[in-house]
Length: 119
Image 1 (cartoon, helix red, strand yellow):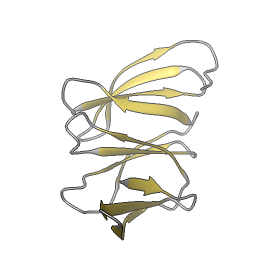
Image 2 (image 1 turned 30 degrees about the vertical axis):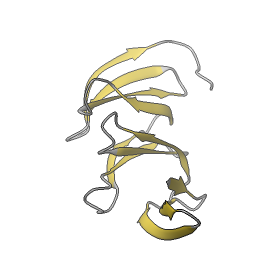
Image 3 (image 1 turned 135 degrees about the horizontal axis):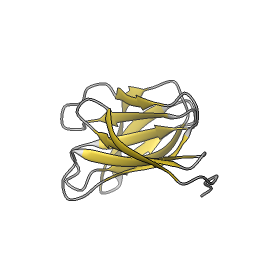
Image 4 (image 1 turned 90 degrees about the vertical axis):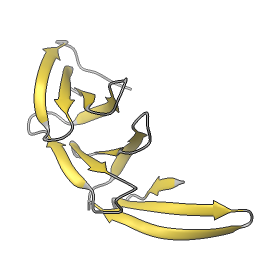
């Protein structure tokens, strides 16, 4: 079970029966608004309240890597494009939908909806 705290800390709870073990996986110092696993569960997207998207690879147990950061508008949501886990799609509050290459954070395409988006 992965869990995020207000302080931007990503926790992992290994639960077995009535016992559990807690581990701090990453600290990104920004409140995390959502966690999304890739379809094959190898990559976890961390979307922050302040408009950044990080990737975390649980099998490597490394630090979270900042993939995307907005300047003009905060990300409202992000998710993987399936099949696979090479691309993600994001939407900003200002209505910009973008497709990203996850390896290097390159923006592959974008579409402006010309409306403000809310969840």
